[in-house]
Image: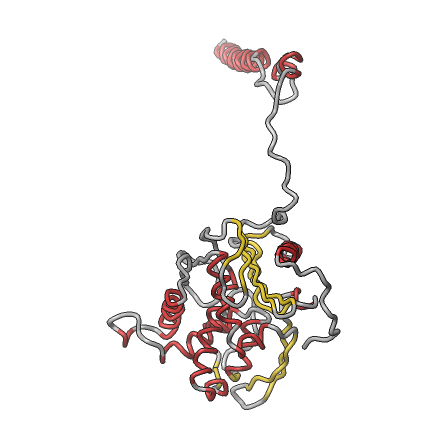
Length: 343
């Protein structure tokens, strides 16, 4: 009898569980489902739908600037850096490797004061060699002349080259803190970048590093980059480098052996007659960016686009369309003469 009582108790418990589960499932099935888009219960009556009205944007102007995919752009006079037209040109945005315009400007200014600086040999540190992102491919311990490394900075957009320059030149620049002995050359170089930004009146610009990798407090604007580009392009050493499509040189290893290296410019506008520089920039945070220089005869314009789409090629039609519109506004209707060759 005790065995029979236990068996009945277990069966009764199993039945209770089944009954509870059955009731729970029944309740779930009986509950009304949330209305989904497209369900009959979620759609208003036809008379309501058919009575709806919608607003529209004004018709597109035929004389306005072209539509672009970028967050901000500016067109400036190449001789003065004065912004002529723009869209959100004062907005503070990330600028990616267009940062290196200022990095190079610091170096070529030093070279202008003392031409021998161009022949100084920069030795790559481990920190420079291990820098993330685009690279000049110079290795730790290798040495390269300053004037050659400018190509490694500006053509392949070498983040490592920017670090090497900061370490090489920072120690001879003006200290930015009272405790100058403990200020690292890298930090002193970045401080000089910010000092020059203030000197040039770049009010929306602040640098946190020499290469443009994402960092808090590292930003600029389209109009500031126009001014910076115009100033940099007046430096012959700078203009010559950014107008070069491909450059080769040799680096010297610690054992004295020489290794050949070649760099190709990331700026594809150089493939088109009339464009002569200056710098691309791309990070996930900044999007695709481009600072470009173009000439029509003696007329010189600079165009800056910031915050382009994820496609690296989208910046080029945007920039070319802005140039084309600006040239038309400045009454340049004739085609550019074709020389057929560039370096």
